[in-house]
Structures are given as structure tokens and as C-alpha cells.
Length: 484
Image 1 (cartoon, rainbow, N blue to C red):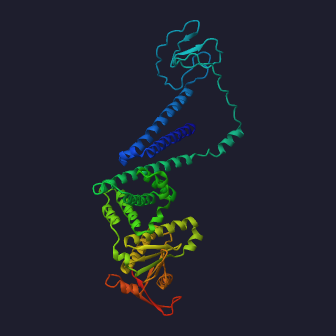
Image 2: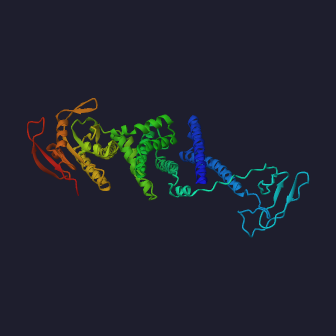
Image 3: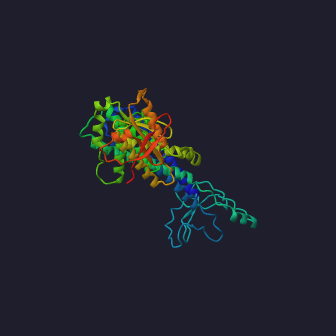
């Protein structure tokens, strides 16, 4: 256990030194960006990795050798030779043949004695006490004599019994777990660097120079990639932010903007164009992790859509379809599983809904705490998004039966009042009332949405008319079939 503890300390010290050297090198590259720009990202990544490995080995190897030599030196010291025979070296086999004795020392300094049997030649220091230990000859005859350690007192019967019943010494798993986590994060950083090099190989032929706008789009892609690889390895939110910030720094972003982007990138998901880039990064990383050997698909199309201006028809349209999502039993979930579990489930809901909005050109208006309010230019796109959301939630629940994620979705269409990036009016109120009327895992919509979606392969089932708060007439509601 003592040797193991010292080896762990050696490894820890080597990791600290290697991390410090790598941080200094990264700081130098940040201070002199003109040299970093001349190198490709994979070259910078290889340079950082080589500096880390060489620094680690340069620290760990000498410390380990010194530790091993010190341990062996302690074992080779022998006890005083008993009368009638020389001391024996317990480390050598009985069949060992001693080498020739060294030349005799001068009478003024020391007397040499050749030992018979299976022990190395030894030298006796002149005027040494009779009980001084005999040391193997190693070219340093002037070592001072050392007193042998006192023998431990014989243990009593009570002490032996207490030793038998004493609990074992606690192990040291914390340091090993921390080192494993550090190694995992380092490995994921290297995988992301490899993934980035693959993306650049796809992008560079058509876009040899990336302006600030396309560089921002690439940052969003890498954010989606970090999200996928982090979920695959069960990383927490803080570790994802650290890896994303490190990745952006490797791409040439300064440390402070990279850290701020990693902490606040989820705010960009409110914009459908930004969410589309994040989603393309997620899909590309999923293909990359599958290990098919083919380059990820959809990167060129995502960049083309990223650089394509929005259509005038979409910008000028005022008739829109509104959708509300609501997590069923979110309050009970917080009380039963705690705030952290409830927040993780909210993040999963946000990811599913925002991915569907990006796919079907929806726009997130606001987050309601346990749901999202979104708008669509096309009613059919809104219905398709709602169906996609419910199917994704069902797939998540199938893999995680204890998660308790279930949604109700309500939809309405009309011309709401737009003010300060928010929507108001009876169109919004009716969509919220329809959502509140829906059951778990159900999509409800008004007749306006059904009529605007005519000609599509949707199945609407009337569930009758209902009196909804704030509306005098009964409103006929329709359930959208999404299973199967």
C-alpha cells in the first residue's frame, strides 16, 4: 500500500506538471495568434497533446526510477552478521556465485574481507562498532555506520486479537476516480479535435475562408457535437461547458469569449436558424461516433441554409399557427425526485421541442417554465412538429421508463398581436386553453388548424365541443393521431 500510494502521488505530480506545461503553451498561442493562424487545427492539437505527454513522461519516469531505487536500496541493507558466519543477502538465490573480490584497500583506510558462500563482497569500515551493519560494496566505502532499528516488542494476546478484528485500512479510490475522469475528458477533447478536422475537410473545398458569420455557425455545430458526446458519456452540464470552451479555444477563439459562449449557448437555441446549426452538429457527431468511416452527411446543406436569406413571404406573413407544450406532472416530479432531476427533465424537453422547431421552421416565442410557446408560418408544419415531438418523447420514455416525461400539446391558428418579441390576443389565449384541455401524450387543435392542414396526410378525430374560459361559444377540438 505504501508503494502504491507513492506511485499515485508520482502520477498526480506528473499530471500537474504536464497540465501546467500545456496551459503555458496554450497561453503562448493565445498571446501570439499570428503563429497559431499559420498552423492547421490538427497541428495545434497534436502539438498540445505531444507537450502534455512529453511533460508527463519527463516528470513521472525520473520520479518512478528514484522511488524504485530507494525501495531496492532499503531492502539490500542486511542485519549484522551473526558470529560464526557472514551475513546473507536474502535477495539472491542460494546458487548465486559471487564475483571476484575487489582489490584490497590500503592498510591505512580499511581492511577487505572476502566472504564465502552466496553473498557479495563487503567492506568493513575501520574502527566501526562490532554491531554495525555490513553494507554491500558499491564504490562508496565512506558511508557512516547506521544503527539497526530496534526490534518491536512482542505483541500481547489482547493486541493480537484486536489486530485480527480491526477493520482494514481505508482504500484511496477518490484519487483514482478523479484521474479516470480527467483522462476521460482529455480523450473526449481529442475526439472532438478529430471530429473538427473532419468537418473542416468537408467545408474547406467550398469555403476556404470562413468569415465571422460562418465561424459562428461552426461554433454552433460544435456545441451540438459536444451535447451528443457528453450525453453518450453521461457528463454533467459543467463538464460539457468546459469541453466546449476548450474546443472553441482550439479553433482560435479567445478564452474569455469561448467560456461565455459555452455558458450561454443555449440562449441561441431560441432562434430557429441557430437551432438548425446545432442540430446539424448533433447529427454529424452521431454519424461520426457510429464509426461507419464515411464523412458525416448534411454539413454542406446546413451551411447553404445558414447562408441563405429568409424568404420575403415568410418575413411578411402575419397569419401563424401557435403551439403550446406542457410537461404533465412537473410539480409532482420536483417533489418526488428533487430539483436536479426535474431540471434535467426540463432540459430533455427543451432539446426535443427545439429540435422539432428547427426541423419544421418553427420559432420559439418564450419558455413557460414547464413548457414552450412556439409559432409556425404554416399550420401543416406545426402539426408535423407536434407529431415529431410526441414521438421523440415516447422514444425517450421507452429507453428511460423512470424518467416520467409526458407532454400535452395544444394548437390554434390566427393573427396574434406582435409586440416586444411576444404574442398576445385571443389567438394565443385559445391555444393555451386547448393545451390545458389535452391529456398526457395527446395533441389537440382547433378546427382552424385542421382546415389549414387539409390535403396533408394527417388524421384528425373530433372529441366534441367544449366551453373554454374566456370564450362564449363552445369550441370544437380535434385530436391529432400520431402513434403508428
